[in-house]
Length: 400
Ligand SMILES: NC(=O)c1ccc[n+]([C@@H]2O[C@H](COP(=O)([O-])OP(=O)(O)OC[C@H]3O[C@@H](n4cnc5c(N)ncnc54)[C@H](O)[C@@H]3O)[C@@H](O)[C@H]2O)c1
Image (tube, rainbow, N blue to C red):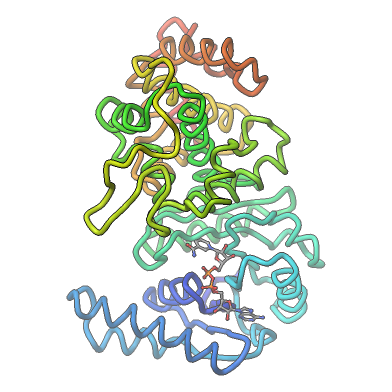
C-alpha cells in the first residue's frame, strides 16, 4: 500500500541522526527523534540546537525558522514510538546486534506501509533486513556528514527491497534538495567501494618503493586534477577508517586486492592514523604537513612517470565493473565521486582519457600484478574496440 510520507522517525540522535532529523524538519516534515534515555535525548537536542544556531549565525536561516524547525521535532525515549510514522530511519551506533534489536522493535511497531531505513556505513543491509518479517520495506540511506550540508545520499537496495519503496525514498530525498544515488548492497556501497581501493593501491605503490609519496600525490593533483593526493587523502580520511573499510570489503569479496596493505595495517598499529593523530603518511604541525621523510624510505627505482594512469586505470576498471554487473549506473557513480570525494567522476575521466588508453594501462597493471580482479572488464574492452569509442562512452554515460 503506497502512502504519502508525512511523519519521519529518526532513531539515534548522534552526529548523523541529529543531522538527518534536521534535514526532514527543515523540509517541513513532522519528525520524531528517539534516543534511549533522557540524558542522550538532551545531547541530541543540543546537537540540533548547535547546528541550527550555526545556520542562523551564518545568515542561512532566520531565528523563527530555526525555532519552527526544532518545533517540528517531537522527542521520545521509546523505540516503539513509531506507530504513526511513514518512514523510520535508524542511525544508532555501528553495532550489528544493536541495529538488529532496533529493527526487530520497529518492524513490530511501525505501520505496514512504513519504510524502514538504516544509515549504516559498513554493515550488510540484507543482514539487518533479515531480522524483520517484511524485508521488502528495508532499505539503506547512507547520508554523508554533516547531513544538513552534504547533498549526497547513497540509497541501497537489497535483493528483497520493493521498487515502490526505493522510488518513494528517492523522490522524497530529491524534494529535500538531496542528490540520491542508487546501488545494490555490497560493502562500501558506491563511494567507499571506489575510493578506498584507490587509496589502498596508492599505499601499495608507495610501500613497494614504486615512487615517493610526493610523486604519487602531486601526479594525482597536477596531472589528474584531483583536489588532493591519495596519501594526503588517506591521512585525512583516517588510516584506521580506510583499514576498517578494506577489511570489510576483503571479508565480503575475498578479493586479494582488497586485503589491506601491510604498511597500512602496521601504521594503524603504530598509531599513525593521519591528521587526527598528527602523523600518518606525513607528519602534521599546526601549519600543515612538515617535510619529515615519511614512513617508507626513498624508492629503489622511480616509476613516477607511469602515474597517474597506474592509479586511475584500476579505479576506472572498477567503476566499469559496477556498471557491467548492474550494481549502479554511470551517472550515479560520477555524482557519488564528485559530491562524496570532490574527485572527478570516473566516467567523465574515461571520456577525457579515452577507453583505449585506459585499456592499455589496465592491461599493463594486470600483466604486472596477475590478480584476476585486475583483468580489464569486458565493458572496457568493448568501449576501447568500439568503432567510435568516444560516442560509445557517451552512450553508456546516458544509461539510466
Ligand atoms: N559519523 C559519520 O561520519 C557517519 C557517516 C555516515 C554514516 N554513519 C553511520 O551512522 C550511524 C550513526 O553514526 P554516528 O556517527 O551518528 O554515531 P553517534 O555515536 O554520534 O550516534 C549514535 C547515537 O545512537 C544513540 N543510541 C544508541 N543506542 C540507542 C538505542 N538503543 N536507541 C536509541 N538511540 C540509541 C546514541 O545515544 C547516539 O546518540 C552509524 O551506523 C554510522 O556508521 C556515520
